[in-house]
Length: 224
Image 1 (cartoon, one colour):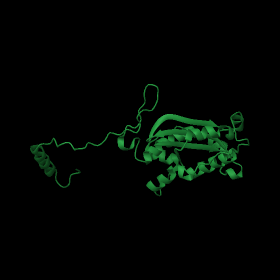
Image 2: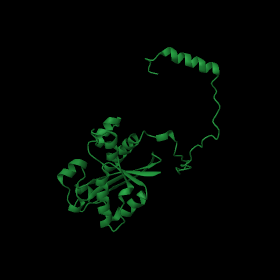
Image 3: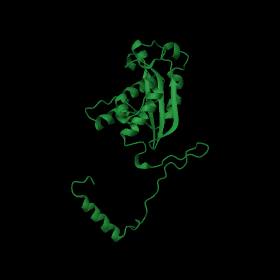
Image 4: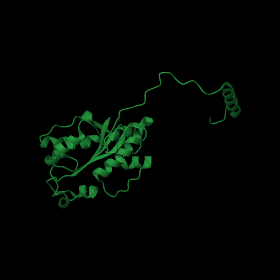
């Protein structure tokens, strides 16, 4: 299963009011394991940068003016994403901006069903708690080491948070990613089959009796 953990930086909160995406960062997961493959792009928004947005991500128009506009990178972004699930924190925000930009670029939009919202997962798992990305990093002991937001860095951080939210770095302890010397993924869907017949117990009757006597000796107050 391929997933893309992603984040965007923008000029504000409302694409219909003229705000634009200025940075996209993506991290690829396969069967919940980071592959090392990423997508990162700065984008010229063709407008001014509000001070409030600059204070969040530190991206100025002087810095962004020589980067491509969204129309020029739209297909590359769609090719990278493909039909993978898009994992984002407050996914409706990112999807709203992405679909606005894709519409203006004359490209197909991304269906809401393609997104996974880690904010909603966190709210269900920890109702009433602070569930911002920074708060979840503190909860899981994930070091952020950042002063400003950045789409690729935040995607890498969110990938760690997402894997913790769904049960750990490698759910099921399945080694799901195999690479050869060229870096090509191998038999990534292989899972060891169950034995057709369970192995016979190797514990002797004497060992079973000794274990039962030991447990009884611990008493009801033990933390066994």
